[in-house]
Length: 345
Ligand code: 13P
Ligand code: SF4
Image (cartoon, rainbow, N blue to C red; front, side, top):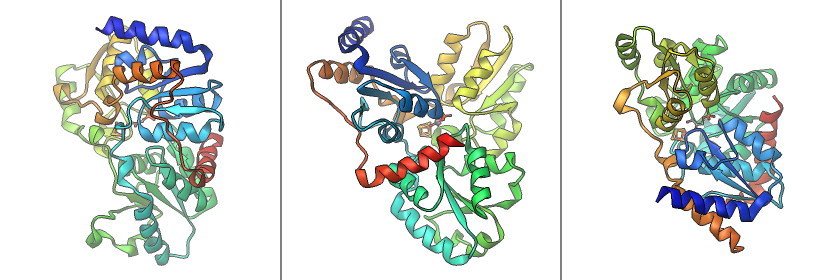
């Protein structure tokens, strides 16, 4: 069945030629990654989308990534997401309307200039909001640069939606003592005086795949493999990042394993598909999942079933555009400003 599906994908791609490019995130299934023209992290994929010439960009990833690709590509290019169900739960944890309310409460407390930074894992309306307030977008590979940019322009940062990436970045910049959490679902916890005293306000969002990792997983892996090295994604909790040897975006994780000496053991603290790819791509390295059987795949990323890839491609060969991702024009322009600021830092 897989062979037949693969042949159908290749046949459609041959027919469509240069009209189509397939971009795949590192967390995509093997059957998607194998057909992608480019595989990488969120930042690399946004760069590839910006440079793509093809009429159709087929995005192996989640909705917010496809939206960003639509914003970044030219108006005559079309972005297609093989499944409309591929929505990152973290992106849904900071809705623009909710952020508007929080912004009013936070800014009422202080005269200082607050710059909002949104993680790429957010929808276009939130990116547009950040641009409007002088802020920008970042990914896990450039969050520290986005913070530096923001502190050059303003006094405080509101970071959304991933509190762990925000906290880990604050540590990296030596500002660990300057953070305060903002939980929009819990009015009791909103101590606005802390907003005055601290320079980094962290929205209460997280990734359920990465929150699962605990320091005792690292202890266990070091016990099981005394020479083990540990690399984790910055969406992991602070204690996990602190106990790891290397922290970085999915492309940093890939590069770390690529540069490992043969025979080294690397425990990987991220989404399980990437760990499995690394195990396949680097048989000379002992690649192990950081939390063994308990390591999760990302339910949103998994929605991109290879059968859907066959479908959108074959439909295109018949002249039918399916699952087009199109950002509303009123949000597009501003969201582009926030993305461009990121691409420039
Ligand atoms: P990267 O930018 O590191 O690829 O991360 C994307 C993501 O969604 C991680 O959960
Ligand atoms: Fe979202 Fe986490 Fe999946 Fe990344 S791994 S897309 S942050 S749910």
